Structures are given as C-alpha cells and as structure tokens.
Amino acid sequence: MLPNKKLKQAIGEFIKNIGFALVIALLVRSALIAPYKIPSGSMIPTLLIGDHIMVSKLSYSIKLPIPFTNINLFTYDKPKRGDVIVFKYPVDKKLDFIKRLIGLPGDVVEVKDRNIYINGIKIPIDASDELGSSGDFQQMPDIYQEKFFNVTHDVQFLKMVGHLRNFGPVTVPLGSYFVMGDNRDNSADSREWGFVPEKNIVGRALFIWFSWDSERHSIRFDRFFKGIY
Image 1 (cartoon, rainbow, N blue to C red):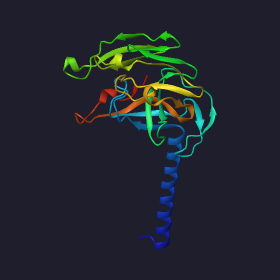
Image 2 (cartoon, helix red, strand yellow):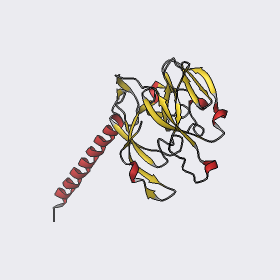
Image 3 (cartoon, rainbow, N blue to C red):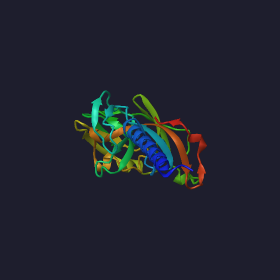
Image 4 (cartoon, helix red, strand yellow):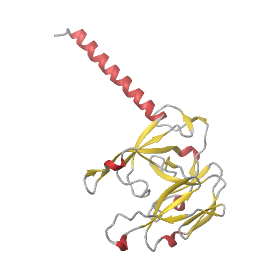
C-alpha cells in the first residue's frame, strides 16, 4: 500500500491531468469544431430531428479560444449563399439556431409562390423524386430540389400552404445575413424575427456524425457521416 503522502500525490497528479485534458478539450471545442444536436424540424429534409452534427468554427474566422465567447481574432472568409450555418439566435443569444444562409449584406430578398428571388433573380426549384415521410398522400409534403447558385439541395413545402408565405422584398443590412429553414412552411427564420448579425455566426455545418430516430427508437445508420450541403 502506498504511504499517505504518495497516495495524495498520485491522486493530485491524476486530478491535474484530468483537468488539463478538460481544458484542452474545451479550447478545441470553442476554437475549432463543435458538436450540435438538431432539436427541431425546421431544416427537414436536409437535417432531421435527432441528427447530431459537427460544426466548423474555422470556416470564416479565427475566434478567441476561450469557452463561451464568440470574439473574432481574424476574419479570412465570408459566409456564402447556400451555407448551412449555426448562429446565436438574435432574440436570445443563449440559444443556438441552424438555418440556410439565403441573403448577403446588400441583397434584396423576396419570397413569392415558393420561389426565392435574390436581387430580382429567380432561384429555380424542380420537383424531386423523393416523397414525404407520411403514408397519407394528402399529408405528404411537396419536396423540390432548389438550385441555389452553387448549392443544390432539397426543400420541403406543406401542400396548399406555400403561397401563404410570400415575403418581402427586403434589403439585407450591411453586417447582417438573411436565413431560412429548408422546411419552408414550418420554420421560424428571418421572415419572422429578422436578420442575423455577422458577429452572431458560430460556424458552418459540416456533416452528420450520429442520428437517433426518437419515434422508432432506433439509430439511423444511413445518415452517419453524411455531408451537409
């Protein structure tokens, strides 16, 4: 048996090493990459409730590596139209939201008859071969492929509702961005609560690393390491 003094030293060394490892983990999480869980359906069909994603905090800038801060040290790139971003909710910065970036500073954004118009240019959408998740045809959402500049992705609309969400035109202020969910008729976004200041942006969503279906109580293995576009 170790003498009391040596035992205390061993315990102290162990605690110090654990503490050091935790500090390093927090610094990495706050400065490089961080996991997030998708709690709502606002980004269906791109992201499902229960998807666990990794977010790059180095996509646009280098931030001060102190946990629970969001201070930029150096900005080397700007968010682009079509990026899926995580940001601090402008109404309550304690909450993290995830949406698709639609409008850049200075853009004129309008939503009309399910189509987005950026500076008067209509963003095309085509009917997708995919079907909605419901077995009742009347309840199935309409799914389209949206060709958003350099990004092609699926968007979802509720039947007979899309025309009710016409919006704008509005001009995005300098230093801010306009965001929308891919679940277009079931997303609280810039159409409802306004613009996202650049300083609120946490990072860009990269990929899904785990996914849990709470309705079926099962793991969605087919979504593992799926890129987010």
